[in-house]
View (cartoon, rainbow, N blue to C red):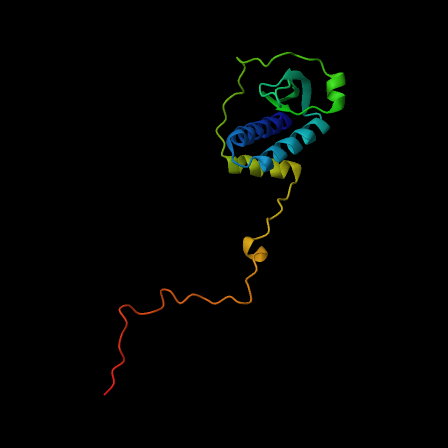
Length: 156
């Protein structure tokens, strides 16, 4: 029973991550989390490959297929491996009437759950200040340090 609840929670987290990745300006990290989590689920036999679907987004005007993955009550698509193209049944076009069940989970909660599941540690990007080196001719600006209007020194 606990196993089913865990898989369902992971599937919900994957759904949230996938939904946000589709609209994110830089979705690479989110898709990487999705891919690693699905690979882990497939390895543990908590998810299975149902078949191939034609993609709704052809690459360079060429039709290609994606692998349909079933995790709990949710379905996801991932790019196929060469073996998938040879072994899996082709299911044709996507079923436009099917929708995954809605989820109420924040993106941060979903990422935390998936990161725990796949034991993933995020590499911290190097700070911009470490890359940026100042010139040896750098002179700090005196703008904003002067008094305005100028104060005359009082001579007696």
